[in-house]
Image (tube, rainbow, N blue to C red):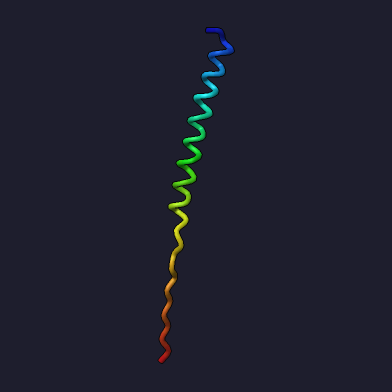
Length: 45
């Protein structure tokens, strides 16, 4: 196996890992952006 083949295999593996990391990051960011409710109440006497 020459260096070119090793490089191609490495780049394919790293690219796949990067794709998985981006998917996971997108999922985590989607979970964190849940809407919040701000409830206020006032009373004047």
